[in-house]
Image 1: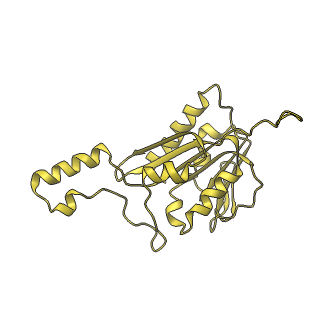
Image 2 (image 1 turned 45 degrees about the vertical axis):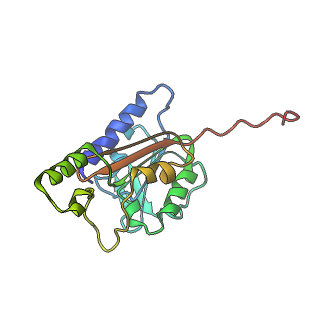
Image 3 (image 1 turned 90 degrees about the horizontal axis):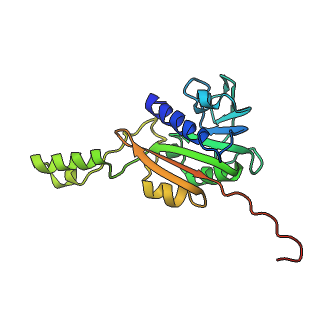
Length: 208
């Protein structure tokens, strides 16, 4: 994992910990985790989490108290509402039917828990606008003037998608509260965070 991405997750965790209305999670899940120091759940900010589990199709092991176990993000072997925190980094672009993984992440996320995602993206960032202004200035072909920056294909042939901030808002974070979406770095990395709504209190008998 790129060190800047790791630091963004750390800063996000620190921001959540500073909130009085967000308790320290008791359990955390990372999809696409690696049994190395690149594992997001090894962040010092999460060392107090009693249960930290990673899932990976091909690489397993234990790192810094995190158990990375075999599993498919599209069909997780965990009950509903199992984890207070679910994270993933640069995984969804490698899954052809990524919507299944999104559905599973939301299913196993406990009410009040946070989902945090990042992928390579493309966006109307200020850097992108400056690049286009430069293209106009020096007279590059129109196709380049209208282009947007994104990360090159990586881990081919299984790199299928790039996701916009609109996709994050309308697909990835659909149904979640406190949604925040932002893009950073160059080429752009897009991050999204949302909180699963708290379960509604049962209606007392006779008051439906």
